[in-house]
Amino acid sequence: MRFSIIAGPRQRADLGQSAAEAWWNYVGDAVLAEELGYDAVYFGEHHFCFASGNSSPLTMLAAVAARTSRIRLGTSVICAPFHNPLRLAEDIAAVDIASNGRFELGIGVGSQWEEFRTFGIDPKERFGRTWEVIDILEKCLHGEETEFDHKGRYYDFPGVRWIMRPVQKRIPILWGGFGPKGVQRAAERGYHLIAPDVTGTYDRVMREHGRRPEDHLIGFVNHVSIADTWEEAFQATAEPCQWVSNQYALRPGLDGTVPPASAAVSMEAIRHGAETGEQVGFAVPNPGTVEQIIEKFLPIVRGERGLITHLGLEVRAPGTRTEDAHRTMRLFAEHVMPVLKEEAARQSAGASEENPR
Image (cartoon, rainbow, N blue to C red; front, side, top):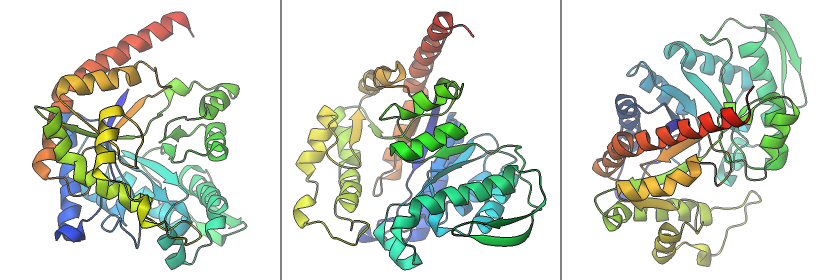
């Protein structure tokens, strides 16, 4: 079982926060994550929209790499259609070198209308572009040829001379998507999944190809807040989670259609979601005391909600105070993580006894 900090670094300009302040808050969280024993930290990417402040996750990870020595560093996710694949491959290799082989590539198709409009990319091309980008990344980062040509539907690169070899012989690739077609292709290639296997497609296809999905990373982000009381934990994250939920609820669709104001998520709905676990918005908070958080996550570790091998925690929804985010990180690492690790080991041992290799 892996325990990671997964962050969508976003600037709260409406609260007077600068891009620089937001940047260094998230870098500081990552450095603390290593000190507390988390396994990995991941940063997301978006452009030209509410997610201002995290348009350069690879650069942010390089800053973290210079301040850490052990923790794994990944993207959650790179929005592939907006990148030149060769430049992206070079930057990935550079971050892997800067971190001495600690980089992991979470990659997906992108989701924000503003990004496609401003970059001049047709949203209908997002899946085709993404998988062609991945093919080029594989050829650059993991191929044996140092000189090659690429001519595809979207990209034409003659005379590529590849010199930026990463430290890792194979950089882990995590597919960041929920749709069955993308998940199936990721499973066919043996990639990890930075999402839950909501349809069971990943498990089925992995096993059809002779792979054990339980040996791969499967899991998504959970908005967590821990304090002495449930109410204190809720208040620390409620407004930030409502803000994020409304940025998603009110965003234009990929055709540019703007949702009505009535689509906004109320604070009453956020509280209801926190109390019941109902998915009332994009960022449903999981507040509680140490004991309540353990009780909430034990069924996940036991596989009662499907196979999960990777617990990602978001502790700083935009607008969260640093003292609240760091309190959650410390309490989870010191009191929750040991219990969940023990349970995960017990589950793994039981599965090995039932299904010996």
